[in-house]
Image (cartoon, rainbow, N blue to C red):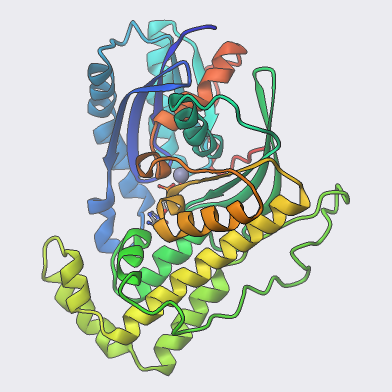
Length: 381
Ligand code: KG4
Ligand code: ZN
């Protein structure tokens, strides 16, 4: 086996991250600088600010990843960087830096798709635990702030291949968490705070109708490959349903009061949120989370049955959600399917997953030409 220390760089959204991973199976260092504090006042990521923050953070973050790993610029075997998808300006910061280093140090440079990175976060940690026996085909749900995608993943030799069998037609699941949190004045990002507040509400209080996918049923045959049924998602409807609930139950003034009160607290804690949320709001939040989790689990398991997969892999920021994990485990167990998640640390954006996804490419000598650039809408297939 070729041993290699790869330094990964990730800058596709609002985390500047660098990590050293040994041979795709051991995290040697993992540094994540989150820009959440910068974007919080705006209730979402501001692309221009993200690029500036990446530019400020990239050098110290990479230096720390090297130092924590006991490595130097010269000693790592290859550099890997996220090529896309993501914010173009943000991606360019990581790419320009990685290119300059690889060129100056005469080391190979590997371009990695961010979505493939999320999948490899799970594979990396399974290898780290000594689980080398994954069965194929694997169905991977990548569910984050920007994506809700289902892929069939297969490995042939060193090469991984992915077939997309479902994606969101509008909002990503994490985006729905973020938009609902913004609407209810619960801050950014929405997922973590919604999860914590949902534990205090009644998840059956509000019934949201299941997502209606217009024009075609979610089992519509893939037009180009009629033998492949599709399992698409849609989350803009539930966001509108929450807005309608707010209007019908006249929650606007209590939301405005919460916004004012929380703005006056520097770092609001769970107790501060709870003190500013009435029962109706907690029930709404809990019911929203339940509806999201049920939809993600039901569609993924329907796809797993249709494609007769041997295992499930659930990854991306929303995979940090405890209820989602529990429900996936419970429902997959009924079908006798193993389900794998990354640790919470590697669920959200990080660079260890980029360095891990780069390792098979390193072995296959699949290096990026120095003229490669960011691809904001890069697809995985
Ligand atoms: O993977 P990630 O860090 O960035 C993207 O590639 O998008 O995912 C961030 C997303 C955000 O939308 C955030 O609200 C969501 O993941 N998220 C969660 C939780 N933690 C993060 N959603 C639900 N429950 C959580 N515990
Ligand atoms: Zn991500």
